Length: 326
Image (cartoon, rainbow, N blue to C red; front, side, top):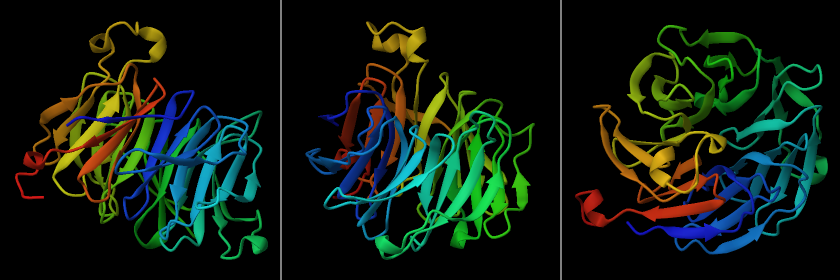
């Protein structure tokens, strides 16, 4: 598995997202400029210029025409994927941390950090079909729990919102009323900051990664804990294979705690686990710093990783990885 190295960002990567067809890969970084690449060969198609701070998260619409990005500059921006034009900017009182389009792309959930006396919030915005009719009104605002909410994603049929963050608790909210429906148990749940949430392709379960050196698999409707994957490093990112029973975790020690001379010291590998057996089945080395972002291509034949070193690495699996003819 020889990776393709994609150098287009000047600062550490924060998030990666494929479009539904799997032919485009979108990357976010601390350098203010979300970037789009061809997912098969790593060729850079272009950048989206307009943010003035680190870009923490992005999502792309089902038809690949719209991109939404959340940034430390206290804005969430809508972009035309093809032209790179900025269609709209939602402005907040604090940094925007997570963004996620609903099924159908008519709504977007956005989380805003606690900042200057403002509490953390989860907000739902209506996305207009015609950008000229777009407004900044929130359909729903949930005053969040203590600390930052690092991720918020839609549950099945847009009926719920799943969130996780600094207080280590996963919560499921009613997306119409904002009522708290379920929260993870303190005993069986994470013990430190939740860094990432990754849904399965059918939406029936999701994976959470945490600085407590574990990732956990949950039932999306009941919030029942299904599996736990334990590693020896903080987990910054996680992803579920859409094709095989495989889970990939990435992380490593904080960059300030390790020397960059020896990759092994910081454990900067993408680790693969068997989803059912919970056993580690392999690892992919390469980054010269912690892995901050992971994503599987929707076809399951490749995955990408983004690191503190500013590189996106695109990994195509060998045919024998699947034990099937490709």
